[in-house]
Image (cartoon, rainbow, N blue to C red; front, side, top):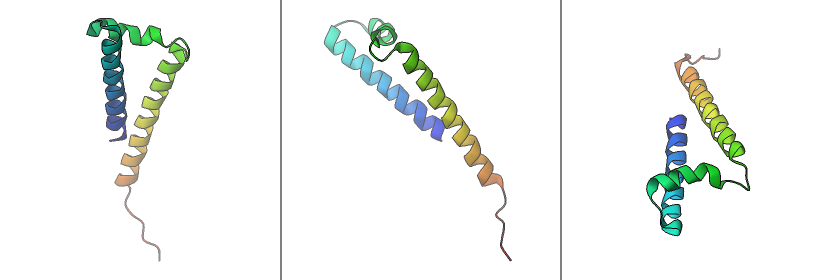
Amino acid sequence: MVTFAYMLVIGMLGVLTISLDMFVYHKGFMYCFKNIYSAEVGAGAITIVVTAILGFLWSVVVDIRLRKSKKQPKQTGN
């Protein structure tokens, strides 16, 4: 569920960025989509991509840990 939420947020941020670029630059969808990667000069495009990949991997790890904790039987203390 965490992975789904992460992908949903990243996707919605991408759509918002593309929509704003289309409004500002008056260009088509594909131009704005291709421009996202090259437009991140100040922050560094590689930094943005690596951070997004690490966030995705971490969300997968959290989902796996949550699934494992649900499968373990609850121990009762005596």
